[in-house]
Length: 442
Image (cartoon, rainbow, N blue to C red; front, side):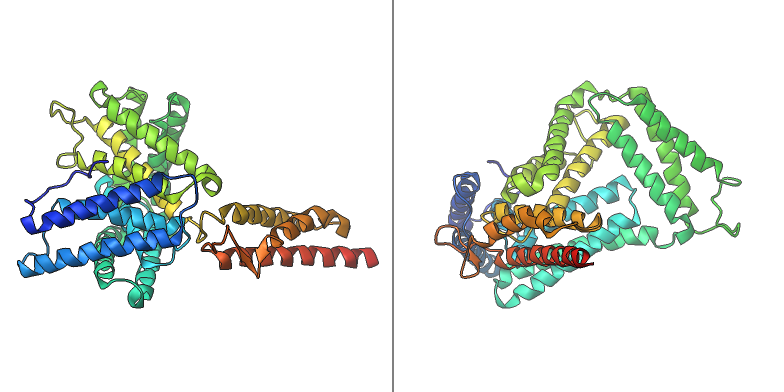
């Protein structure tokens, strides 16, 4: 495994032993990640977390002593790998609402916000989602003050603050836009992203992109003297943002129709790599509940990081130093951003349940959906129709020992979530049975 590219200061000789130890810890975390023969146990993760924190403490002592607390070198890169893995392990064991689990999300959300800023088009909904996630992360870190190392909490606080600063900058750029223009703006953002997605299909959909271009013409036709008007015929604020975005949409659709999905050969290897990563993440997002171990996201994150950080002044360059043209640049940037967005979605939808309990949890989720569908469609005509659901519920309930789901002699994390879901299924089933019995008596 290689480090993500980064500017590296010379290593202080006193930090060399720490580098050796954190490299060893990263190897141990990687081996644990690769072992799919059994589920990840909490005590293994917590032990490695404590060992990493001890190295952070020693590193801080050395740097404070030498008066360079903000030093960044290879030790920090490897520590970042360690914290990234530990964060994903906390999600894997179901401890989503504890401070170490936040680390991986801070990395992903920072990348997303940077890319939104660079692409210079985004909707209010994008920013609302990021703001909500940062609020939850802040609450998680605050809850960990009595439990986790101040070294970790300070680091997480700085990372969240950095994300908030970028978010505030993006929010300011939309702050002066009138609500009257918001629907048009969001529609243009959606069209631009749809064209970018179509541009990366294995078979270029000419008719689809031409359809988007027709939508743009319809939007332009609503303008009066080059401006969008409100219902009362006034000129709402934010014209420059929306009109500028409309022009970008026309330009991008024209370029995409001309190139028909064919990227500059010099950037094809990077393109194919990013398409493959995007497609794998898309498949994972469709089958997440049954196939995802959160630590699997680490390799995707690091591959994307290396591509992102290999750019020069934001430009993708080929091995000879040639800069990508607008089509290649925007296409590769879209694939990067889309892949990080999939990772973001997978992280925020991770359930607070250990992977050891996920099979039971997923069965209950499916059972709940079926019962709710029966309820929505008018219930059952006879209690006998609920027998299959009742039998499944009872079989899952019988797996518990003293109210807990055990795996061997272990009590995996997420008991409360699984028990709450089981209770909810029982409640819906009881409600349906009662309704059917009342119908029978009537």
